[in-house]
Image (cartoon, rainbow, N blue to C red; front, side, top):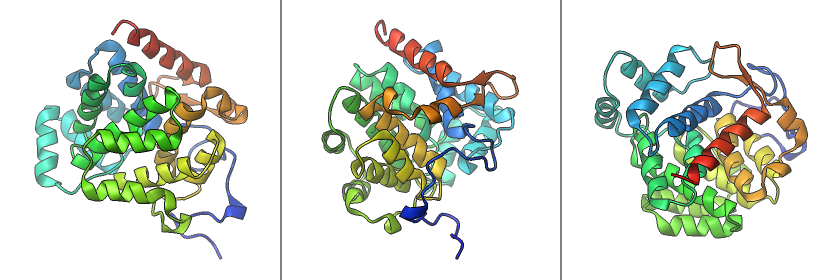
Length: 287
């Protein structure tokens, strides 16, 4: 019997290699592209400048990316017409009060790299980058939660220690907090892994806390189906901080490729991402 869309893949049928599909094998999606935009905006202005980041998002949107979230696309279409990001953010809160997609948690990790030693600025910029397209309290809380965990993991905390500390140190809507606390004990079949930010965070922490390596965490997460690339981006940020770049399988690192900026003909590979992270870390020493 074929799998239904979004259904978790059986354990004996897990995909462990980068395979071609709608995009070539190793090609990154909107999660990575928007992360690069966040990183480059931080390099240009730190603390983060919302106007600068919004302009970079709009330029990316205008390049017709092959993969773009529905809410993100709607917001950036409004910004493209000349509305300010503040006005659009208020419009989203007013007209779409229940819209809490995962479009901001997927891209927020560069803030943790730059502000690894400045918690207050990490929180502020995590909030700002989310508000531009995803102002819902769940989205903002998820970005703050993720970037707190990334830094604690990179500083040597165990995944469970970082998880517990993150839930204790920021305000998270109580039902969201309960969902995250219950996530590690859930079965694979219980995880929906949709584009809802709560489902993405739930699936990512489930994968991180039920495995003991970068590869296993990512494989378990993406094989949940559903919004696989976004949960892969989130758990990849967590597991990368926990285990280090040298634990990422070389076959995956070698296959990584993607055009940035889109339509520029400039192809990014592993060394470009390492260089981007290094520039953020260098900036962190003086910021």
